[in-house]
Length: 58
Image (cartoon, rainbow, N blue to C red; front, side):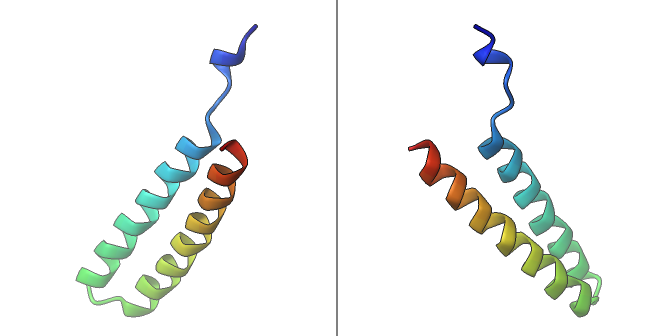
C-alpha cells in the first residue's frame, strides 16, 4: 500500500558513489593524492554494493 514511500536503495547508493568521486576529484586537484586514493577506494566499494543491489532488483 505504501510502496511508493519506500526509499530506493539503488538511488541512494548511486548518490553516495557520485559524491565520493567528486570529493576524490577535488582532493586530486588540490594535490592530496593520499586522500584521493582513499576516497577512490571507498567509491569502488560503493560501486560494488550498487552492482549487487541492481542485480537483486532485476
